[in-house]
Image (cartoon, rainbow, N blue to C red; front, top):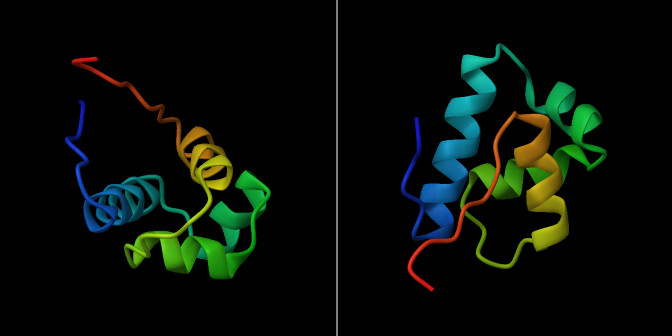
Length: 71
């Protein structure tokens, strides 16, 4: 089901909810996505300056993707 994400906090909440639904810990997700645990922590906390490339890796590891509408 699509999730509306329009703020860094909303993205963090969506990522955290997906991780928990999959039964993954932050270290497990970090390993699966090829990023550091600190990055996952910061993403889930809604840090506004996270790197897009790493965000996409985490979303892919969670089975998600980015869809841009209305352009």
